[in-house]
Length: 205
Image (cartoon, rainbow, N blue to C red):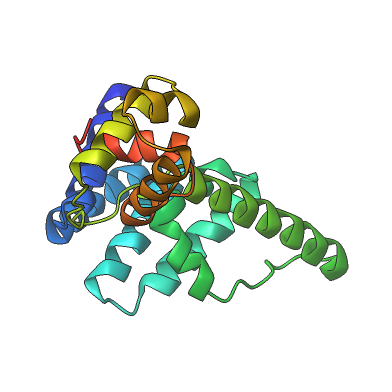
């Protein structure tokens, strides 16, 4: 079942990436039913998080309820990574949702635990968003890079420094820096590693 679950979850994420929210939602309902019947907690949480993302993109108001339920389950088992790995896809939802401490006999202890869990979720999600800014972003916006930018990008991918690139392209270092900054801006990244990764995803290099 592990390989089958991976297959279905990958298919759902591909649907979301391509803006095929209805197909993603339909498959999520089937996976959610399986998780409920077979009492698979981890799958249930994963499905809940992806369902909330899908509902959010479809404009369904119930996404907050769906996400709250998944977060409460994740908190119970302290499953941080199951949330944070969705990075840029889940971040907008986490920014909007009002997180409420779960019920417990010792309210002070529960609230403290909840805050620590929530902080860890936000910190890790922010880190994933920074590393993979375009993860599961529906419908990539077309990015047009100049010939010079593409040459610089390809040389960066080969590990060349700014000075070496300047020599290779017969340019000044400041000119290379300017084109690099413009390239980062168009790709929506902040450094060389992110630029190479993003360009690879878009098939630019």
